Image 1 (cartoon, each protein chain N blue to C red):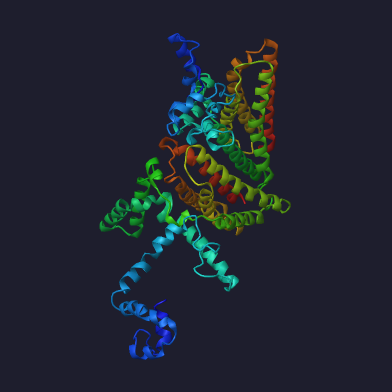
Image 2: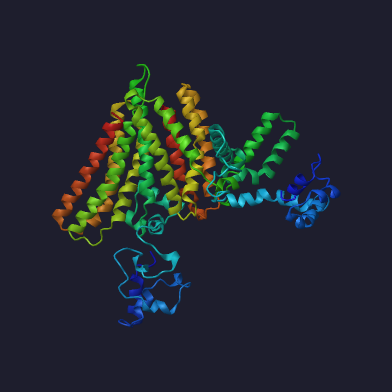
Length: 265
Length: 310
């Protein structure tokens, strides 16, 4: 995210040459165009910055820095993390100390949400099958239920994918400036992490234990969402933010109940 | 070949290389005989001096074929592996050639020598030496095997070794026969043991999981900055499904569930070790290797568990 351009504005203010025509040159993506003719860059129209991050390079034709919407490089910026960073984010999602958006540090990734969701789907399928097998035990041959896998994938991917979009759209509708779709996705994706240990221990056929485990999972992830969404939601007026929070928590409770009913019945 | 033709046409002797000069002088009546002296020279030298560059040329043939096999077919418009025209061979020959190609590629993916991007080959010096030291100390074969295993575990691949691995030459010439074959086998075997009313669902589901999973894993590696060829990576992941096909086969034959656990863990690890070789030379940054391997891990473990519960 080197080309957001905000730093440049600060620089210009301190140097006091606001309104100078060099402003556009500072906004350019300098190290990427050495293969092209240098003087030609002065002719770049000033309105090349679009609403997309990275879209400001659109006018340049040097191959490596092109980040079109349909190219792979555009999406690679959403996966700009390394192993230690992912582990750190996972750790702080389970043991929340600071605000998670501070930990994301303006660089929300999609790696965590996607692969955490995939892991949750796989583990829920396995433990759900194990739980059904234990409930079925002793009554002849047991054949697993493949619909559990497709159902789990639909539930988890759907919840993690669609609810943040809805939340983001509602926040935009109520005029919140700080709403960011990627951060919503990252928040919901990392909040799924608690379901992995919950699913791993709740394969037993003891009903009351399963209720407790799923309730713990719900409590942890709902608290995580509440803590991190509250600053964003409170940007709207009080009544709307309360309604939104209740809706978010209710939807999350719906997810928890669906997990309990689908997999650990 | 051009040197052979005048000798066989002119001299009817049993030995075509013994060029009888007087006999051929009588026979040659066509206007081409003016060039016979020119043809005579390479023929005379063929037995003495011209043979050496000829054999040199033949021995350099495989090297040339390797470079040419890379994404190009050897004969334009012909089958990749056919040396000559394939129009008059039987269907079985055509099929067996493809099957042999699949087998050869599978061997290059799954043979332990090539696992983990050929790491074991490069580490062989230390590993084998350790094993021989173990045997020199009077240990039995099992002890030597244990020593070798410990050597392999001791050289557990860190990110560096995985990245340094290079895929073998044969894999540059990817195909999708193996992935298709193994995904079909896996789907069939797994759907065989499914509930009766869910057989089509399981078949289509497993088939979709395999292909979408391969695509997603490859895309993820590319998104993390790996410079891999998309279809080549799909080819390798498809070939690494072979251990899982074994697992599915064992499940289809009602292996006991306790015996399944160690066997399937070994098979999944085998697949994973072979699948990691995609990353060899891909240019993934070193501290991202962990998150690049994790999708592969989820993919194999998920399919392995599907085999396990079948």
